[in-house]
Length: 307
Image (cartoon, rainbow, N blue to C red; front, side, top):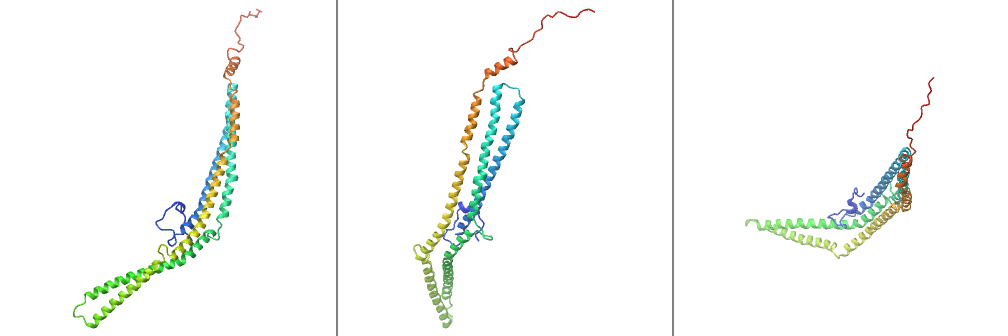
């Protein structure tokens, strides 16, 4: 199973190359991280829809409150009419945001959930597709890893024999003059044999390394097979990114509520044009100002009689 995914699954870097053992796990992680990313996007839109609903309810509560306040408020007629229309724009704006919330909830959210379900099918604990990718990579890397292990073992054996050769040479050069001839022969023979072993180990090491050199047929075949599987993972990632672009486009459509917004604006402008300051002032003049019928005291004869 690939290691835990993080955001570096899609954007991170590594100082180890893709063709090195087990580095394909980054591709597995990227696939699995996609499931998490789709979840994040779904959660984000869910939160946005909730915010829209909250705003809708707040706007409608605000409109109800101020329609009520205006019915109790004494104000110039045309001024009050435009003021009341401002309150009505709150209701219309609530309708716009209700449409946005509904589109997020009824259109975008179901698409995200269904796509996630269709493309990240799980077995008991693993995603089926990630196991498929992993198995394909493992099948290609198994013989290659075996070759790398052989190279490592040959290298270690060669280094060990080189070290032993130097020790034998030092032993040969430091033999006392009085060393018995038989012992000298054994030391020299051992030195010669070790050097033969060094040559054989070097040849084997060099031969194995040639298989992983640039242009070598085993390496070319291995890299071609790895790239083929990598392209399978790329194809899925392209599918996910294209789907995200479709969702982002749907979101733009969600925000394009121009018809509703234009109606709200037209209604407001129509009422605004009825605003008539002189008429309001004249009405107040006639109803409450000098234009009202005022009553002044006049001399009235006393009508009382003495009883």
